[in-house]
Amino acid sequence: MSSNIQNAAAPIVIPGHRSPARVAGPRSKFGPASIGHTLGHVSPEIAKVGLSEICLSYRTHGGERLLALDHINLQVRPGEFLCVVGPSGCGKSTLLHLIAGLHPQTSGQILVDGRPVEGPGPDRILIFQELGLFPWLTVGENVEFGMKMKGVSKAEREEKTRYYLRLVHLWQFKKSYTHQLSGGMRQRVALARALATEPDVLLMDEPFAALDAQTRDLLHDELERIWAETGRTIIFVTHNVREAIRLGDRVVLLTFRPGRVKREFSIDLPRPRVLEDVHVAHAARAILDELREEINRSLEVEYSVGVKPHLAPGAEQ
Ligand SMILES: Nc1ncnc2c1ncn2[C@@H]1O[C@H](COP(=O)(O)OP(=O)(O)OP(=O)(O)O)[C@@H](O)[C@H]1O
Ligand SMILES: [Mg+2]
Image: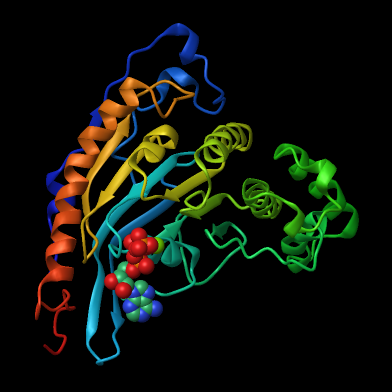
């Protein structure tokens, strides 16, 4: 059944204090002073990625249909860094798969630059937590791989490999194999490989979840810098609310199954942000309070004997 949760809730603006030193963040595209002010309601005409009334139901082993996403409406502006949080199983990965064109939605429409998504395309790339790097290829060859698939000429591949490996500070490791790198370095190779295909939209599914805190902090800095330098649109899924606030212009919170947009938070904090900052902690509390309600709902369902998951309308019970 359709939900009006997302329509009822206007984006909440997480206010920031503006110390002049920290306002001078790395972002060049919109300028730091505008961060967080005008985000939230993005009109479909200017959206880079637009989702209208997206529903997705999976067929389960028993032949029933499980409603994973329920009437998702979301507009992502060009160059926006959008983070998506929600309890496990709420449909975050599913949402990215739909935008990547790996799976068709059951109903609704997804537009990228105003054109319907009908399958994977070079304008979008999905980066998983499991990086999918090839262990038999060197770092340089891994970065070249995606471009080769696109038919990019050798000379151009070499030039871009050099450019993007420098961007992630790994040029000197171009001849290493991935087993010779740390987890954080491998993550940066995956990022360079994705960026080298020059997609407009980066879809990132918990890319830093398996990393230690120090490496993750470094990659936050690097991702923010690369985002500022390249002007890409990023949709970033995470379980970590502070990470979402550290990185996002906007944080979208999904409900437990079926996934609906429960609330949008426009993060009006100067960049670069620090995970331990009191304002980040304050913002995290506001989001966590709402997320906890959804996690509690998920626990009730998971631990209730005989309670069936939410089924798609018309599904057999
Ligand atoms: N291929 C599939 N077939 C059937 N059901 C699926 C399939 N993929 C996902 N699901 C179901 O859809 C729901 C959403 O899954 P999804 O992986 O999108 O959640 P998620 O929010 O990414 O979870 P997590 O935070 O644990 O990664 C879950 O209930 C899951 O069991
Ligand atoms: Mg997932």
